[in-house]
Image 1 (tube, helix red, strand yellow):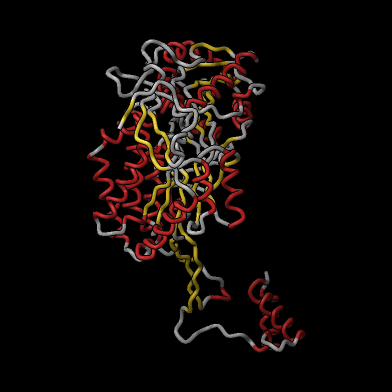
Image 2: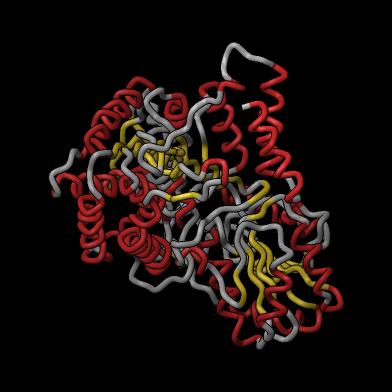
Length: 543
């Protein structure tokens, strides 16, 4: 359902009924169907249902799990337009941005799990030492139980399915707390997951959705039925999640902010890198954790680059993504984000940065009345004295930083002068040079002469360092993060087993025990034949 509205609500909690959350489209401010604002007891009840359903699911086979994933993939592929429109309505993104960031990534996640997931979760056999040569050792990956997902608002479809897919394939139940800003579409996306389970004869209670505000997320973190938390969001909220999990010794994975750098060396062909700069900065209207927030352009090409970019950014079309006209940039999901961006831009300009275009809310005639739009913006001359140098923008801002004297070492220093460390990229005519520069960046991911492909290669772990958090999604590392890594040791040779020698058995004879123990150390770890023989003699003497 949709109703007309002209201003965003002051609070998403319905003042007339606090048990409901108000939902609206950020590009039109049209009111959408409200969703429940769940209490702690309701969260606990949903998590308990998931926990009970997981008792059976953990016994499922990989072929059974693959059937569920194939059902999901079949649905997604046949409903691309519908999913993209829902994402555009609820989060304000363009339909093409939805296809690239929501559909493509999700389908690749499913394909990767179908082809490699079972291999990644197979027992990992480990080498044994000479002392334990009669043993076989391996690590097995056991489902943790119930995973708690606190998802952000920038990609409502993918950010939900991303963890549902990993969680289900690794044998877990999944409880998701979606963002209060994109709850309307999340309810539908959640129903897709439940339907896929039910269609294959499994309990749909394996997946649960919690809608609500911060208190609902807090209840998830503290819930006794949830075994691990995966949080995506800001560093400030991430710290609250850690603090909430600490009393329960509950493990967390934190994928926090990003302020990714894209570097253009002086040897690039400008016309070839222009599209990458535009896509890196304006994909999803800049609301992208691995979006480009810092463009480092070498000095000798900076004037030509800025001149060309100013024209391109100025000509970007912005508006309602579901209107009759084509648009390049959509709306901002949160109205207050526009205020934050404005404060960062005003601070930079006041301290000497050059504003080439944009730099304010978009209230032009071609914008839907009352929508939450911030103009695509180009700013240059940014220095470390400005807030925008280190604070995450999360908006449609191209921020150009000039690298003096085309110096690679200076470039590395500038890139690393940042509290975040998620992704990065370097463009150069020399792949070797690009890799040499990028290998010095303090980031969790790096790409040479490309942007964003790390996440499309789902065999790679995704995550960062510093304020960008810790732990990983995707790849074997991310899938195994959904599991308990349990070490197993058994006897390898029938009839041969470990026994405790009398020399170190109770009651203890210190002299004999020390002599025998030293003999073991000398035999197995001595660095010469003489020492090893000496160890054998001690074992015979004291054994």
